[in-house]
Picture 1: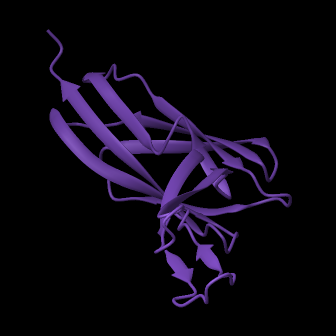
Picture 2: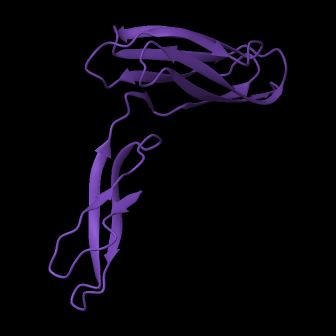
Length: 157
């Protein structure tokens, strides 16, 4: 989003303010904006914004866990939940819309800063399924995390 002084007198100065919504960004970014003017020598002046966005709480390797295999032998999946803030974060609850398909276990690796969430398939039926796990925290900057679960359970040959 850009805000700028609309009229600048000849020889005067103006102000351009650029804002980036980093809510859904993670990692390095580079953005470019062009400032157009009626100055014959500087018709278009590029402005560059570079930076790095670190989320308050991140999930490694990401917010997705695939569970694929033969019924009764599906390898478990796991992610790490990492607190990138200076103070500790507590996980207050975990819920899922797949109660008949998965079971999870949360392990605290470094209290308040690193957790391991292991998920295993407990399906009694074959086929594909998709759902999610909702992890709630006591952090107002990131009160809720959503982890997508994608299962594929096949018949043992």
